[in-house]
Structures are given as structure tokens and as C-alpha cells.
Image 1 (cartoon, rainbow, N blue to C red):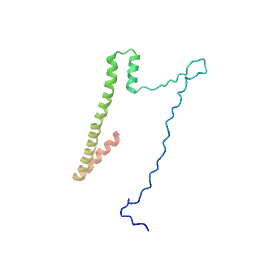
Image 2 (tube, rainbow, N blue to C red):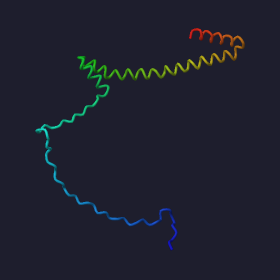
Image 3 (cartoon, one colour):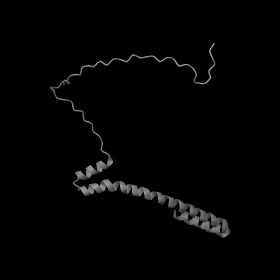
Image 4 (cartoon, rainbow, N blue to C red):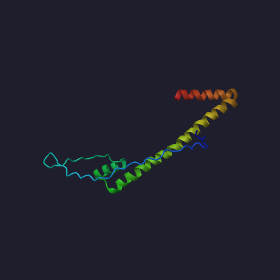
Length: 132
């Protein structure tokens, strides 16, 4: 009869086995490669595409442009892209604010203005449809 376990991990663990590690045996170094075609080695060439900034730089240098223009293209190019992206966010927010304000003003004019306000809103909508 076994005694009840007091804790969840109270069971006896199996005895660890001793594994026999392999003994290191040095192997002979292979000799020089023998080529079939009269001693001419096979050349393995890896071609990688350059990153975009290096491509711009290489094209500019290949066209005979000076180092200042290359530096301007490499450094000012990403800065202009960043400037345009950062300028687009406030403009989009401003457009959202203007659209919501115009919608709010139209709603208030319709609600508060009575029949004259509704007629004014209808006139504005007609003018938009004719132009649009």
C-alpha cells in the first residue's frame, strides 16, 4: 500500500540514466578540390539588389552628377517624403473638422430656423446638385 501524496509534485522521480557520450575521433581533412575542366575553378556569383537610397546614389553618380547633388538626393529625398506624410495628417484632420462643422451648422439651421431654415437648407442642397 502506497502512502497518499501530500503535494501535487510529491511523486518520486525516476532515477537519471547515465548516457555514454561519444568519444571524439578526429577525421582527416579532405584534400584540395579537383576540377574536371583543366583546373579552372567554378565561380559562384551572388547578385544582390541595392537598397533604394544606394540606387539613387549610383544612378546620380553614373549620370555624371556631382557629390553635392548625390548627397541632396540621398538625404533630402526621405526628408521630403516624411514632410509630405506629416503634413497630410493635420490636413486630413482639418478636413474632418470642417465637414463635421458644416454638417452641424446645417442641422442647427434646419432645427432652429423653422420653415425658413428648412427652405434655406433645401436651396443650398439644390445649388450643390446643380454644380456637382
